[in-house]
Length: 380
Ligand SMILES: Cc1cc2nc3c(=O)[nH]c(=O)nc-3n(C[C@H](O)[C@H](O)[C@H](O)COP(=O)(O)OP(=O)(O)OC[C@H]3O[C@@H](n4cnc5c(N)ncnc54)[C@H](O)[C@@H]3O)c2cc1C
Image 1: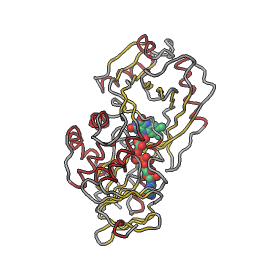
Image 2 (image 1 turned 180 degrees about the horizontal axis):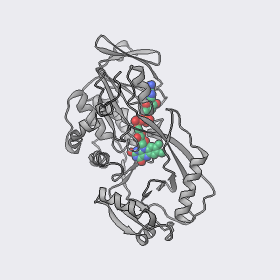
Image 3 (image 1 turned 90 degrees about the vertical axis):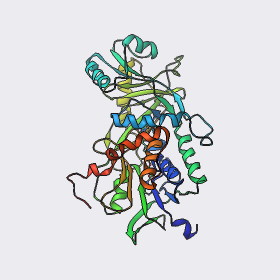
Image 4 (image 1 turned 90 degrees about the horizontal axis):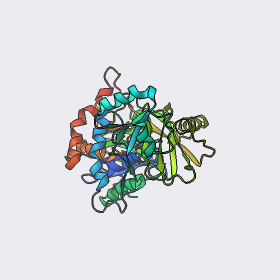
C-alpha cells in the first residue's frame, strides 16, 4: 500500500451497509478510503438483520425515507448486481382484541394500511389461532431484501470508482491537524479533510476518539431464531407478521420461520449473542399466537440496532468539529434506508444533488442533522 493511497478526500469508518453504501456514493465525486475493523464487511448489524423492506414501519420520516429507496431496490442501476434485490412480501400488523386500540392508532398514523378481520388473517397464515387474533393492518408495499447482494453491489461500485477498502483496520485514533483528519487504523496512518462516522454500535466510541461528547446514541440488542414450519405447511406466501405492540414478529425465510421477540436490551457495542431468555420469550409469544408447540430451534443470533434518543437517523456534519460527519442511528431500518441515506451523505459532503426518487430525501436534511441532539447538552 503506497502512502499516496492513504491520503484521500474522505475516510469512511465502518463497512456495514451504511458505510459501504455511502463510500460507494462518495467515490463518484472524491477519493475515498473505507476502514473496517473486522475481516469482512457486514459482520455486525448488517449481516444479522431480518432482511425485510418494511415500508410501513417506524415514524413517518423513517417511512418516507424508506419509500425513497423502493425504486432503487426494485430496479437497481445496470451492472449493480446480478440478482433481484427485492422480492415482494406483504406485511400484517396483527393484534388481539385488547390491542384493537393500538391497531386504530397505527392506522390513524398511516391511513394507507387496510384493516382486515381475524378470518382473513387466518386464511393468509393458517397457523394463526382464531381465538388469539382480532384483526390486522395490511401493508402491500413490503419485500424481502437480498442484503448481501446489496452490500456487495455497493462494494463493487465503490471499487470500480477507485475507492480503497481496508478490512482488519480498527480506527484507534483521530486527530484534527493542519486542516485534515489524521486517522490511525491497523497500525497505519490515513489522512483526509472529512471523516464519516458509520461505525454502527460503535459511533459514540469513534466520536470519543475525536474528542466529542455524546449524542446519546445507544445500541439495543435484538434477537432472532429459526424454526422449521409444521410438517406439510407451505409458508412461502405468508406475509411478515408483526405484533401491533411490536412484542414479537415472524416471517418465512428460505423454507423456515424466523421469529424475533423484538427485544431492545441496552448493550455496550460488542459482538452480540442471543440470550436464552430472549429466545424463550420469542418462542412463547409465537406459541401463544399460533397454538403450535416449538420443540427445536435450528439457529439463533442477535445483533445491535443503534438508535438516537428520538429514533430518527443521524446524518450530517457535527457542528462542533470541522469535517466530522455522522451517519448513525439507523435503528431497525438501516438496510432498507441505506440507498437514500448514502445519497444524502454524498449531497451534504460533495454537493452532488440526488436524482429521481432520491431527491425527496433532501427535504429531511435538517430533521436528520446531529444539531437537534445537541440542544441543551455540553459541546465538546
Ligand atoms: C435482528 C435484527 C433485525 C433487523 N431487521 C432489519 C430489517 O428487516 N430491515 C432493515 O432495514 N434493518 C434491519 N435491522 C437493522 C439493520 O441491520 C441496521 O440498521 C443496519 O445494519 C446498520 O448498519 P450500520 O452500517 O450502521 O452498522 P453495522 O452493520 O454494525 O456496521 C458498522 C461497522 O463499523 C465497524 N466499526 C466499528 N468501530 C470501528 C472502528 N473503530 N474502526 C473500524 N471499523 C469499525 C464495525 O465492525 C461494523 O462492521 C435489523 C437488525 C437486527 C439486529
